Image (cartoon, rainbow over all chains, first blue to last red; front, side, top):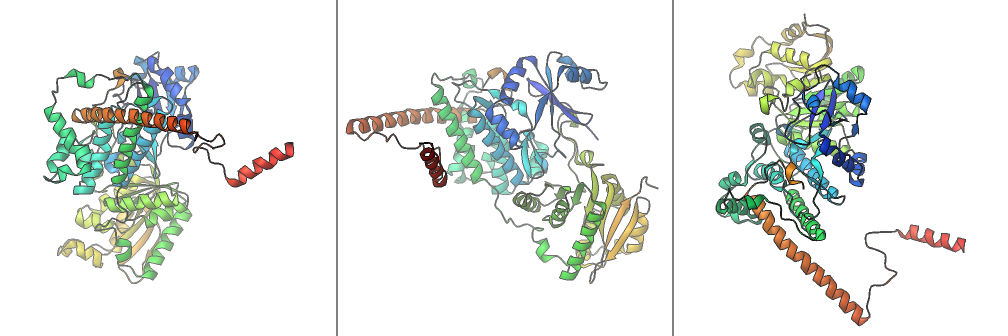
Length: 482
Length: 77
């Protein structure tokens, strides 16, 4: 599996993946503060609630053994006096460009809650970006434990406020107000949106609404009037009264918290695909038979890690999660992924929903394309069960992906089970997608599909859904493609 | 925050706006403080001071638990 490059922005240390472990080197001058934070009541409470990534310091022997391991990133050698910590590994890392708005909101909620909680112990967050957070199933986990630093008790300013606004509030606002897809935003930008950019989208009257005034218009007007070379703006203005400084910060966090709440994505959002479960082309017996087939395959193979590709609102992801599997549910529709997240959170299901088009999966991003690995780098071999239900016609027709290619990708994604729904070109939904190009798929039939599967999978069993032109296949991966 | 390690972009307009709000909220801090002092003084002067038996609003004890505590105290006696 591809390992991302060590992090490099924080001067206090660096974090990286190495041989399946998540390691962090903390510079000698920052170790004491870091360990002090881990001992605070706030950190202990967050660790107990699994909201903060579990962290332990390697002892001298472990650190020496690690430093002697070939291939260890150079950053561990350039800081010989630094201490090495190991974090728990969060399964299947995901990034803001793959989250539905609901997950970005949850990440923002956790960030502001942690900033508030740490204040009581005299600590503060030194950055506030969604990249500090990963999701364990549907639950956000703060992974950048080094983001906490001891705050100057007289400082009434929270420097990351602007970053919190840029990376949480303004993207949520633009998504809610103008439907801006978060995937496009965070694929192109690491640090969100500037108030000046949002200002340009606003109508003349909208600039004066209370929310826009505070988040967008006033910061834009002030930036225009201010002298950007004035160093005084960035100098800390320390107060002599620490109670006053804390009162001001608490007030700031309450204000940001209220703004975040006002931008919470609405439940029951409608989209092209959000009503699919109510409007699909199966009748009840066919759908029940489909459920039974998938359930039997899951119980027989008992996969621990399942990818549900084209998950829609997560009906079959839920079935898989109920068998005890950790599920990654992908769908290109953000409203569907959001609905899965809500359901997973309500029912405490181990499902990680992502907004993702399998035909255009998220690319590797960041400096040298090594900060966020691509979806396929993370997904290849990461699952022992893959569900591809009612998906193949979208890939074949809408995306024009050859059948052989689809099966090869499925072969690379799963270590064992593939449950695939084959849809005949005569199917009503298939024909709706072809839009008169039926001749391109005239030769496609179940027999051809089965022979295309042969190099990659053994057909364990198949089942024709009654009253439809659809057939379900339970496929087992061959040890090597023939 | 330690200014040396503040490596993120603090914005320009956003930082000035935060500082402006901080000034206003700082004023509210003193207003609150003054209001509390006035209320305290008036209560003291009029003899309506805070009751010593009052439980802090932050601590909530259920009636059942309170009853158990009273019983335990009686038994000890």
